[in-house]
Length: 111
Length: 115
Image 1 (cartoon, one colour):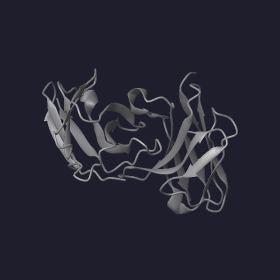
Image 2: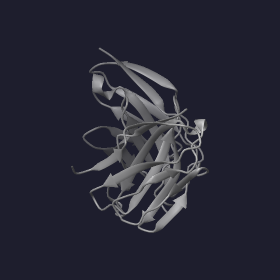
Image 3: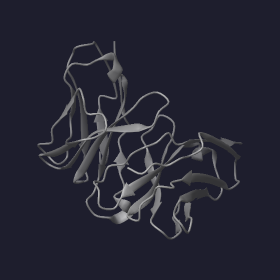
Image 4: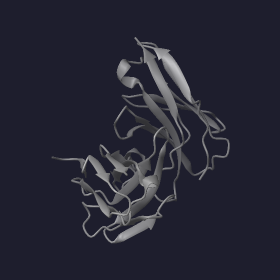
């Protein structure tokens, strides 16, 4: 499975945008980029995914670099509830549906 | 209740005992997964299942047994528990369709302590 690299931790302020980076220099052409987050004492939850184009949903936006070697998860206005560990995961289109979680980025939101 | 549930939520057992963690989902999802999460670490896949009676190993299958006789249930058994299996166990499910990138839905977790 292709590997992702994320900062261990990031900090931001409430109501400000947050940009969470992810490097995946060994990504293959059939790998989708997925983001999940894990709130304290809960199971992970899906945030967003994409292949080549930028994606938006009600939770966040995903900006994918043109060469696909990096991506950025954007939370447009962070709230205290967004404090969580965010995981960037590559999933092979043709592989099984399993996900390989790395260490993720622990996001702290200051009031 | 609809969704994915795990039982028990907390379990303390002794080394050498057999323990079974239960997972039940009401969506009729084809895929089900078991992960473990050790303190301060990400999740690691133990076993997964693509359908009833079809299971396959993940990253860390040793010491665990799974079965899937019904689509909605995916029990995980520790045949002879060891202290290294102290962890939080998460069950997840996903549907076969590509909608939302085969999004996985996770249960609340079972915190297992082996003494």
